[in-house]
Length: 327
Image 1 (cartoon, rainbow, N blue to C red):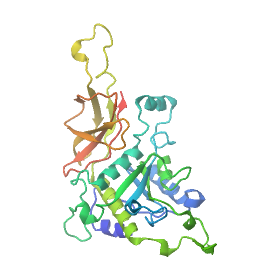
Image 2 (tube, rainbow, N blue to C red; image 1 turned 135 degrees about the vertical axis):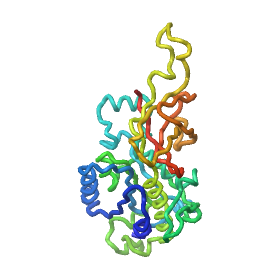
Image 3 (cartoon, rainbow, N blue to C red; image 1 turned 90 degrees about the horizontal axis):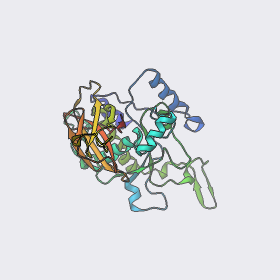
Image 4 (cartoon, one colour; image 1 turned 60 degrees about the vertical axis):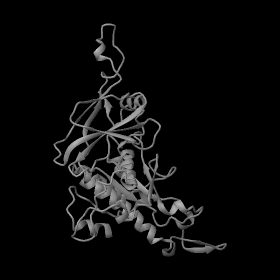
C-alpha cells in the first residue's frame, strides 16, 4: 500500500496495478480472474511481480546473507503457455538453440537482478516520496545491500503461487520469496507443541526486511513501467554467420558474424536498442553493445553465446531483453 501511495502521485509511462488477490490456496482464484480479465481486454502486460512469503530473512538455518537476500523464481520457456510457444516444432527449435533459459520470465528476473545490483545507475531512476526530484540512487532507496537470487524454476520445488496464473495467460511473471522459509509458520494453526510455537504470528515478521523487499519491488516496477516496451519480432539470421552452403558460396558471405532484426512497435519511448549477451552457461548478461537500427550485424560467434535484444529510452532506462529466434 505504501508503494501504491508513492507511485500514485507520480505519472509513470505505463499503468501500474497494485493488487491483492484472494483464493491462492484454494486454486489461484483471484489471480486467475485478474490475469484472464487483463488477457480478455488485450492488455499488454509486460511484467507481473508476485510477493509471497517475504516476512523475514531470519529463518533458520540463518546466515547473515539471508537477511539481505530475496529469492526470485522465473519459469523456463517450457512452462505451459508462458510464451505462446507450444507446438512440438517450436519447442524443438528452442531446444536446438539452447533457449530454454531465456524465457520472458527469466529475462524479467535478469532485469530485476540487474536493477537491484546497480549494473546501470541511470536505469534506477526512482520516484521520491514527495513531489520533488525523482532521480535517486540505490543507496537513497536502501537496496545497496540487497541481492536478488535468481532461481531457474517457476516456483519452489513442486509448489506454486499467484504468478503462475499470469504465466498461463502468456504474461512475463516472477515470484519474490524470502531466502529461507520456516514451515512452522506456514499453513499452521497457532499453538505451542513440544516447546515449538506454530502459526503465522506478527512477532515473526521482520519489518526492516519487508521494507527492503518492498524497495526492491519499487526499483524494479518503476524502472519497468518507465522503460520502453519490449522489442517485437526479434530474430537472428539463419544465413549470416554459417559455413559455406556450397563450393560456389562467395568468401565475403562466410563469417562468424551474427545478424539480428527486430521491430519497434512504434514505441515513442524507444530511442535505441541494445544487444546483450553472456556465455551459454552464465546466469546473467555480462556484455552489451548499442545497436543503431535493424538489421544489425555484429562480429560475435553465436555458437557459444546467448543473446538478447532490449529497447533503450532517452533517459537510459532499458526494457528486459528478448530472445532472438532463428529466421
